[in-house]
Image 1 (tube, helix red, strand yellow):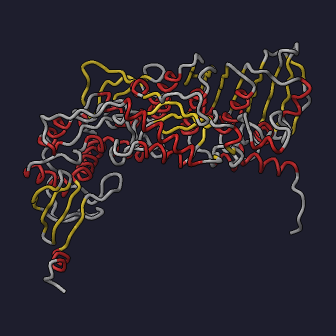
Image 2 (tube, rainbow, N blue to C red; image 1 turned 30 degrees about the vertical axis):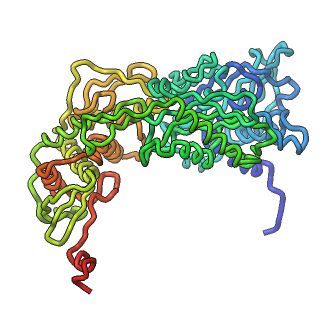
Image 3 (cartoon, one colour; image 1 turned 60 degrees about the horizontal axis):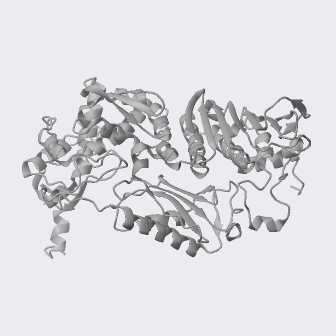
Length: 576
């Protein structure tokens, strides 16, 4: 095949594929243009998760009438003049590709007006083909309406996630930029409903409440400011008592740009060394300001990554600042001398007290009668287990049991998860699900992202014994919870679902329900570090033996390890 220059429409489609990955990419690029234009008010309207419409309007400086058609051309920008300018970028955008790339895969309308013009200018583009500029009445600023995204590249539509996921990604971008620019008012409407609003009064904690929830926002620790330092690190970090089970609560801005950098994540987590339990991660929103010439932002097609000229210096400042804040402001955890060592430490999740160990211990004693004991695998099961005799407990975490073919070590938390999961799903299938109605409904306030996730799964929650209804904005009212979570408060029960929310993309309702049920059982199960009486150990083994899939928890972790008699004999030198 001979070498030839690509047609303009093909080159535009390739460029659009790098810049416009999904609807959230369109929102990001248009919001960045508005911020570069000095906007103090930005409004975003989205229909059908961005497939039908994405409209972004601002009150920035606007585009002069004679330059409006040029703004839609590829590599046309007002932010660069020379190649040397690439090494000292002071704006969010600089390549001049965003509008042209978006217009290449949509039906775009651009309306803009400067304060010097007595009227605005409108240009319409369809699939990269621009029409003539027309005068139109308009306020000062710029409004961009993107319709039918990817209408001319239908293959791209197939790669988009569910509407709920795409809406959540859009909300992520808007809330992050509201954090970085607290003096700019942001308003986001999704399908006619206001999902996020920031008044632009300079209070970042208001936006933190939308991102992490009101309780967590109040507990976040503010980093001290050092205005004279060449590398400035400001923002908020969570105290050790507030943590998550994943790294999604870590957000970084470099010179006002939201970036994703594994080295920054490592620096922050290292600052929490010996302050958090294994498997728990902090929440942080850090704003890192360095001289523009000390960072290269032209290293990623979507500008999501940066490269520091002196990375070690930046990471050292980040780690030291966070560590000093934690040691200087965070209070040490209280130790209850009235409890034995084996009851473990009380850990608090993000803004919500952890489970009551005493109540969970009592709940195990009051477990319903186990299902009939099965000495052999059930037909069609994934593999049963033999009759076991409880011998004891190691570290308050693992049960030691004897079987006819050797020794078994059972993870009590994973085993109880499996027991509760099968019991819950069996009750669901039989229509005998036990739930507990509340005497007084309780309200729970969530972040906007969590509220969107929760609202999309209300039907699945009802099928599992939750009676939860929207109560305006990001607030929900809880009327009933599953009996399995009766030891928790309604607020704790609902947080079992939103703290570790996955992106449930499966179209099958049964699979979504199973994933939610697994999260519920994870919270309700007895925990590692909890001492069980010998009778309680034996009861748990009986319940596990009755399960159809006793060898793994609902999340796929093994519940037991088997040491055969032969392997023990080899270890003790009784067998060659």
